[in-house]
Length: 74
Image (cartoon, rainbow, N blue to C red; front, side, top):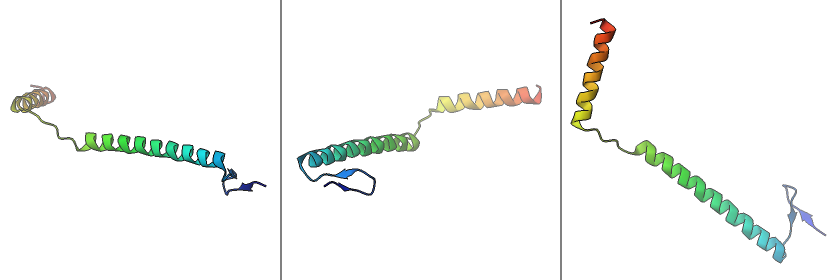
């Protein structure tokens, strides 16, 4: 006689059940590792420092100044 678990799947404690349990465990382990890797990549992108040179800042200031002049109609 086969016993059913709460999710409706059969509980098999024989060799096939142990092998299936191991496969499911490995599958979940792989999925968890992939999710952790994706989360780590998101954090790295979020927390990574950006470096701007003095020339980049000067160019941005110049663009802002030009835009402000266009807005003001000069």
